[in-house]
Length: 532
Figure 1 (tube, one colour):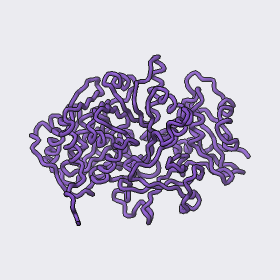
Figure 2 (figure 1 turned 45 degrees about the vertical axis):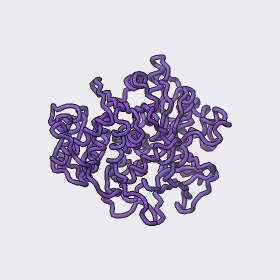
Figure 3 (figure 1 turned 90 degrees about the vertical axis):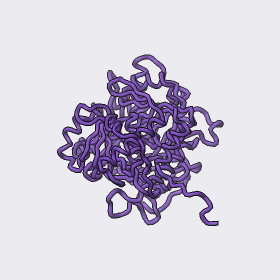
């Protein structure tokens, strides 16, 4: 009875083979930074990936070597996802928004041998070349002005290539965390974990892809494996529409012209799109589904999309989880819920997809497991087949003895499995021995029509240890006052949660991935004092 099924290793090459064979004519559209557009198909992506694999072998790139990409979303970047893995290499997607010191660190730490990049990032490449001693070859995706162009490079090959085989547990991709404290850390994705993650992404409660799906991912391909979309999309044979620029006018035009049904991005992307549509006096695009992740989406954003007839999929995950951990969607009682109740449910982070286990533990001892009662708030931990065990080149595991990875998030688990994130463990405010959620304060403040952005941090208080201070960016032309903000918050949060001060600022610092940087905000106001 042992081994009654065929051997079929879960490797990335099977994914692109399937897409080319079963959805070979399905289009992949790219709108480039210069305004031009190109069209290919899944069969074309596979053909170019085979040539790319050959070209890398011709450069002397070996199995396990790292190949970096410094690029936005486009079809040639997609080719690289399959070409590098197909020749046994490891694709290292580099975030161009990182600081130079971080770019120097991660490329050298990864020991990248080849760098593929967009012409828009030529200044970064010129600046960093002397600081990247391991990089031997540079290939430009969309221009040959400063070296070999990608299309010319792969055109020297005939595509007569057999994908390199190996173990399911071979590495295929490398992503680094944004490094909000210390140097960024490398997370290695394996063939098996990536395939399992992509299959999970196809579930109706996740991305719900079908052959009729037309997806425009605004989440960059360099960020957390683009949420696994390029792999799940290939499995389902969907049409991809890529844009190398994230201008709302460009994205809006593409959505309408190409019949986009689904999109995915961080909250700031959707906020920019709202502002564009309001300024132009036009309706939001008729999307069927919008996935929001990266940080918590404000309630007003979810409500507006839902009123547009769009299914909102609020997702949570991180680089260390490949990244999908939970995704929101209709629950078993959906039809019985009022619109307001549906919005409230969607504002949470959804439920774990199959393959993910979650638990919360006491914030004080970080050991005692808390009940899933919809009330108890604790440190969120996760484990599963696409969750990190050890960081790249680290000597010790990143998980505890039971395999749980500490996410750094604070959350509540509800009886139906829904996750409600309330903060980060380093950002939660402890006042008089009680916890205050900075995220809930921020989201409540963002509901005010004159608030463009808000961030709450704990400031030392001589009596209560910490008290919340809310930093607010006003919308242009607003006469908003501190008292206005407090009055707005009073019916929305507990009285003792109300900030001790509201300070108006011109901007709020963000990380390279677009999240609010509480660390930088605290540093900026390190001399700020509250009186007893």
